[in-house]
Image (tube, rainbow, N blue to C red; front, top):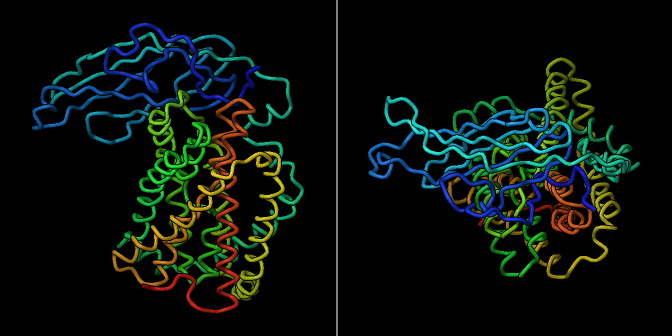
Length: 444
């Protein structure tokens, strides 16, 4: 029985004849009907392979746009259409959608082309793609997933115990923010750009190649790729503090990468889903991404105000920041093992081996990129940590919201393994740093 709330677009097995025709495709173009749960937000990715005569001659790229309209707005409504901004033979458009009541809605998709100052010309119009909205489930666990929260995460008592500690710790990090460093980043944003390139371009390619090398099943391979397409994790600036990095840079990189993830995660899921042959468009949890931004920005901003207005309280918070950070790392490892026990019960050895290499590769990649551009040692460490430590919880939410229960738990092995490997490996580095007291990442 399919579980509502777990699939943005589980394609129908019946492939409509002639689906390969034309320029416009959703997914890999081999299916026309997609499934989506009731009362849920999500995205679909439309690709276009059209190039005008002007564009083919190379004198000027055509100004093509895509218009999408639902022919049954009560069942499905279109929220927005955004261009990926990537010029080339294949262009992608991210379509925000919201489902309503149970039923089926056809999409009217129009590809328009306007060369120079001429009026838009209709290149292609398709109305053969449709989305079937399935009814909700009475299962409480499923309803939790539909509302954007996994029950076994939200009900974990350790999480509630850690929340006040996390909030105070983030306020303390706000007291460490250096305004001059922020201004310098505005003038020379090289570290931030390196982080974005490493997180969203190189890491997914590594995960894709690794999944092929390890011959991972499709669901596990996609889970690994989406994990490596996630933004930097909130723990990045904890590790930067404990390992001699630049805290202000780490916070800035985490915030920027989380914003970029709203565009790059849907595109990455579409591209690698097609390459892996997984015929499903994934549900990217935009609410969780915005929540992550707010949960970082609000307490850190409060800490910056405390630093300016209450220097005595600021000194007290700064005295607590290191022991609190260490406790949070240990608590995070314990909570991750506890929450992932059922999912990891039957994990395969090759998945463990693949997941363990992801943080190592990310750390080395970030450090090498930063060293190659001549950044200072604290910035090299920070870029290394930000590329190597991903927000695996976002990837886990994508898996749980995009597949049926059994397949979702199977695909979730990848983000869990990467999260556990990342936290364990970083904890080892922190302990080694505290015992031996050298730089966390030795300069070459």
